[in-house]
Amino acid sequence: MQNGEVSCLSCGSLDSLNICPRCALPYCCVKCYRSEQHRECSESFYRECVEQELRCQSDVRKPLKTFEEFMNEQPGDFRMNMEFPGSSDHIMDSDDDDVDNVDNYLEKVKDRCTSEYQSADERELDRQLTVLGIGTDSESLLSSLSDMEKKSFNLFYNKLLEQDTGLSRSVFTKKQEPK
Image 1 (spheres, helix red, strand yellow):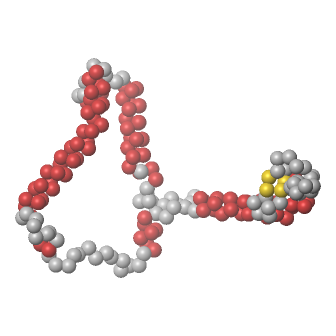
Image 2 (tube, helix red, strand yellow):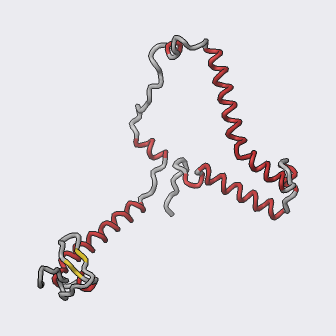
Image 3 (cartoon, rainbow, N blue to C red):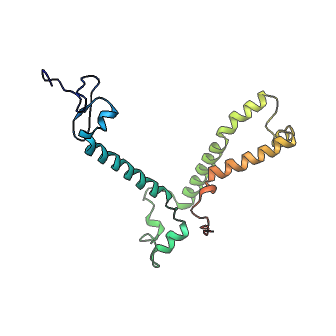
């Protein structure tokens, strides 16, 4: 090293130096990083990388616990207390209306929200189908499809339903016996 410049630990080069994050020694290339002067540090780094990868792979290979297995591991007296102290009259505030009016109001709100949710995407789809001259009647939609298109549609729908509901990867499925 001349004039306080840092050089490669192996070849002495001053070009494009990297610093080892473990031992802080400078090196210019992979060959110098793996050199005899740096072998102990680099080998321990590679060993840790391999060990970490093996740990990750072993975690991935562990089978998922089914719901049945999980429940079998729980103590037999595992029960939740869902009762609230006092009667249901105490749950309401003193300024609340009588129970029937509150229940009716909540039912109306629930119905309105449910119908808005269900029709939100359908409105746009209905508009597009009308513009295309197909209409929104399900019978006319199905009648405009060929037999092959109907089969494809049914397969697509079933696959989409399976993905949306998560039926393909459920914890409630029976554990498969090893063959």
